[in-house]
Image (cartoon, rainbow, N blue to C red; front, side, top):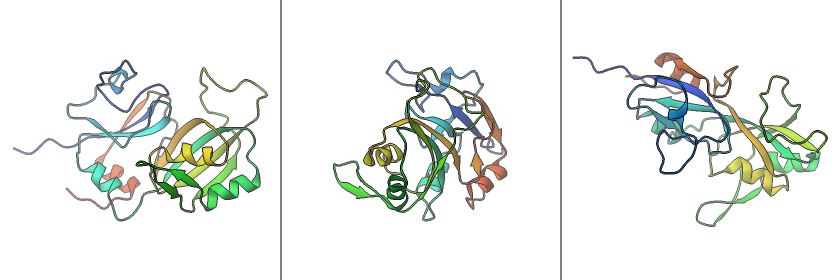
Length: 202
């Protein structure tokens, strides 16, 4: 009897939801999404409660190791809204490396990464706690391969710009696209690994 084929999904994880199906805490859960996920499904990587965007879900337990423990780092791109106007000097600091505190209390200097100032996307879905009209803020597009705990938030805080919204847009070529918050899309196995640029065979 052939083993059941693995299944692969992406979801636009909404704000105020954790990347888990069960929790002892009273929080929004992935099981609250109105979608018939298969048995054995789990999230690959995490987006915290306050973060939004692309989250991978699969029944294949090998994906986490293939993606996050690979010798070849994988690019992740985030759209980030921060308080106040980011100056060229602050932008350069983010691009070339800033010092952040990581787990264990150690200090770490981030590697060079791609950071661009961008306009707020016209089709970006709103949120109840958006900045009030007229308050100064900036939008950044940040692409990095490092994955320290809360790295993007800590990077913007290091240059005195508190992160207001953080939306993961893509991992390599696997992109959020037009998925709305809470929407789910299933992918074929071959397409899934091709877009993640992972060389893997059954």
